Length: 286
Image (cartoon, rainbow, N blue to C red):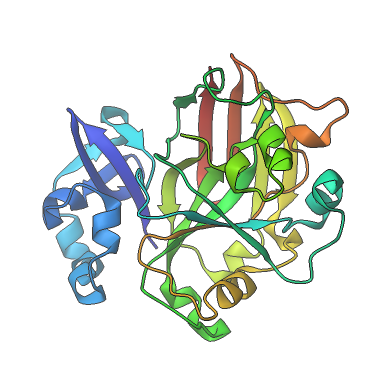
């Protein structure tokens, strides 16, 4: 299984496969400068990657030589999100509606640019006093797909990554629907890699969030209300997903808004989110 990584080296952007400490440069092999462009190729064009002997002949770099970028920096369209997908979080944010959902709650997050691990989010310039974090498992879609059946879901997923769904809680409640509070510039980070995982692995992943070293979120994907298959079957019902689309699967309890008093993000904070088998996403708050 592959670990895809996007990076910058000597001012040039590329992507590759991470194997231990080495990155094998797929950007050079395909003549592309982003993972998104690679995902948009058809399956036959992407099949070069299946030839192991090809991978180990291409240029490689150590991970210490590069700056890691978000897997997808500028999404083609809005990010699809699932709200209240952990029972404990649904109870925690009762001010946003206290009913446990019977079907996935879908909304979109429209971001100008996604930031990556070790990048900084400037909350002081944002029009909010209540910037919050949400550790989430993110799905990267591989193929154009619509009306998926459960057995078709996994063949249409490129992989999974760690995401921080930054949220302006005051704007989220002010406007009724959640789009505005979720869509401030740069209010999404992702990384460090996109990991191919099996269904069995995804159903049992530990997810943790720390702020300044304090453990805030500590859960497992086994606590999803709606699993990956349910999410994508419902989302693609009558609606087409495209290669490179991103789907966030929800956050567990422990967000800043859930504390009394709330623990919102402030300048100087460090937020770390780790998902088992994928890695740790680190961001600094200004």
